[in-house]
Amino acid sequence: QVQLVESGGGLVQAGGSLRLSCVASGNIFRINAMAWYRQAPGKQRELVAAITSAGSTNYDDSVKGRFTISRTNAKKTVYLQMNSLKPEDTAVYYCNADITTPYRGNDYWGQGTQVTVSS
Image (cartoon, rainbow, N blue to C red; front, side, top):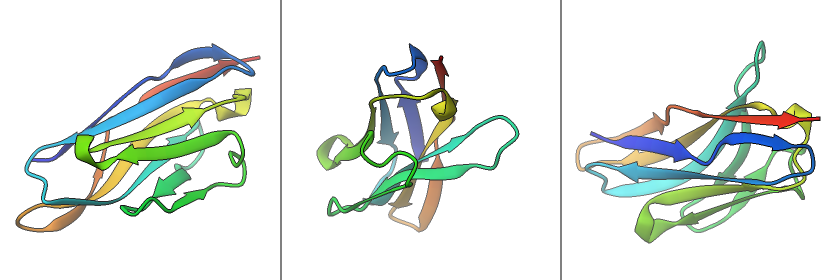
């Protein structure tokens, strides 16, 4: 069984920084793309940033230049470094990964971590 566990959320003042981590565990054959999504109250879940297994990245326009996604394949971990945080970044942040097990490929989600940015 595959699990994704996020950590690093919290409360921070506007202009501050946080670093989110997400570790994958279980019977994993290969981790393909990994991504961070977020969902603010009353809004749909949206893609924040994504990274391929080769390290190519993609960002939502609202976070370009402020957030950096990275991964360590050996540790099965993806990170989201968030700088210059704004109140509108407040949301539950979810880790997502396209993972191939010995039996099938599937899309997995973490449980989410709350990020709150105060003004």
